[in-house]
Image (cartoon, rainbow, N blue to C red):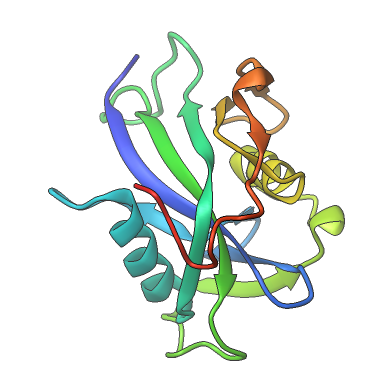
Length: 176
């Protein structure tokens, strides 16, 4: 394994079940789940709430943890440039709901937000986004997946570790 980065993301849905996606930058960028990196001494729950509000302007309610996804670069290959190989990223992916009918603040420039039906995601989504939306909408939690950087390279951990989400958990409760 190369350098390790900890990150968070959320499958944020609205009252109709659509999923919030962000398309960063210009040109042929792919759609991704909102989220970001953990800061030093910050837990995944706090990071998810902070990063998603900062990136999208939306306040969210986390309902549970879909799973932990390892995004791995191609083995044995370095990235172009002087930085060396791409880091492996461990992403805590949460299931969440948008709190309210509108964003609490205006999103910063650079992230074009859009809502999508889970069964009609855009073609240009990251592998992590496609896998996490599939798992979240299937009601899975406790998922452990290895997701490659390259589109179409999703390797699943044995799915007996995945189970349907518990319906009896109170809304807004998250167990760190």
